[in-house]
Length: 334
Image (cartoon, rainbow, N blue to C red; front, side, top):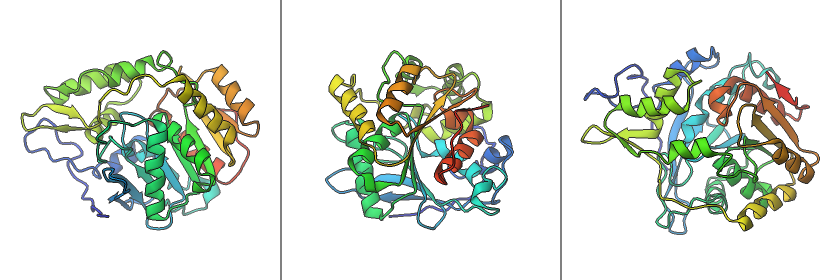
């Protein structure tokens, strides 16, 4: 494993400037200011890699804190570990997470899924939930981590579901963010339209314009941060997304049913968080989730789309904190 220290600068530098140097840890102050967050002035965050064996490429992850991780976060398709930055900053704000005490310390891991972020690309291009779950499970074994809560959004949520069902001892609680096995290509049409669009852009301004088109409710600063964490500038000064775009095709009916069976098999407390404006999880999906997990919780977050962690990070952090200590979950939050 290797760790990278951070030096906060370049947060306001024009990414198209030839002198621009990306520093993935330079934006925490901006995150905190945008969402009016308290907590430690300089969060303890480092970059690591772990060899998962089996001929697979190394897996990269962000380590928040230095103690045994209480949280493990898995991002969605075409995202990366930094999608959880604001949620993790909010978890360290005692004003937002009072049940954790007056000085909450966040010990967490946010993985880059295989083929995403700084993790390696698989030679076979397989990034389905079952395959990625095996990789994440191997990483947790190598690192000796057993978190209190495993949190996954979209593809990361299905990966977390597959892992938790196959290996109940991998975590004590499971939170799924705006995803169930009932997802279809039609329900996620806007997501697919964005991530299957152009791979390369002549300038940062153009990749920013496309991202804004598909995320009209997000602030310019949050979208800028997101792009810088999820794309890189090439020698010809064009910008390219970081994730492996090799097509995987439609999920089969068998895979769909396998994941629903995984919901039925879950042995730990499970929370489904819905984005209230998202079409990805509908009422029928919610009903099927509760039919298979009668003791599960479902909470809808107002004014949140599919990316609840991007649209309402403070509210999601508060929900996850309540869930982590076993308190009763609300059915809806404004």
